[in-house]
Length: 380
Image (tube, rainbow, N blue to C red; front, side, top):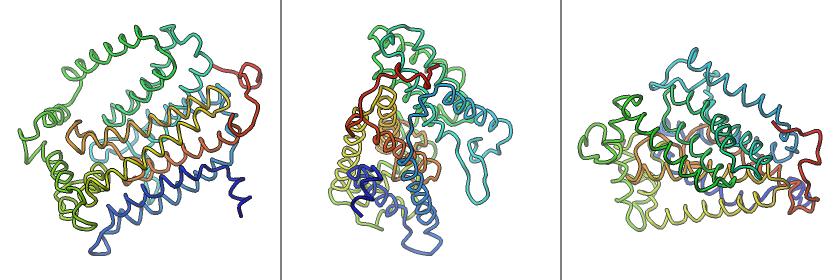
């Protein structure tokens, strides 16, 4: 049995960190009344099971074939095509054309596309890290991120568009961009926000930002969710109200408590101590991912690992920030806790790919290779 587990090449410390996070989310969305209350709990349990199948399957694959730039570009192009097709053929659900109905479940293509973006940016920067100071590489990588970001923004899905932007920005930072170019990027970001605010954002999106700055302007309307979320977090106190006694989520005062406000629901029932444990487990996860990233055989594996960290970290920061009133409400999932099949499977698939890369990583005893010495893997 021990040999079998070793052959799986799994970082069991990482698994030990994410399993309690999944359990925390399940408990927070578990209904304590009628059977119908278990709808999200039951479905999320299924998604977690499917996600772990992807995780273990991906961990057994040798992912060096992804160093083939044309293959990755083909996957990226397919993803862009799917996102564009959504704008033409998809039916709007809650005002956004974000989903592909597949019988008893729906797929949100924006989620796996985040992994594709990380892979293609890791691929691009891994060959050009020496000349990353050239502004043309920032522009080209920015185009890779801009196309899916624009298509997702048009759906409209502002939250996911923000995640795509920050994944690119994070990977730019670790790629060695110069401070001068960093200031230019920040200036462009400010100008882009002003253009969005005055010419592109819909009135309801502007209202969300205004309500974030002062939710008491419309406590029964646009500011309602933010206020209820802050009430939930604040009322948790030191030890929490207890499982099943979270008034804001259990009594329906907090909308979407199983997705957009799962942190607030958890914080109310588990309190400050529970939140500290949650942060400890997340910190443990980031530490293991960082260790795995730096043990990568080449810059491609290292950059993918760092991109995956940014993916999970940005989701967590934005979700928790909007739950405690520090950021506008944008509808971002909290990894491992929030309900959602597409997001859960995508995160576990990403972790599985990282496990697969661990198999031939530098720490595993394999010889460190220069990618230029591998002629079959040509870069774009």
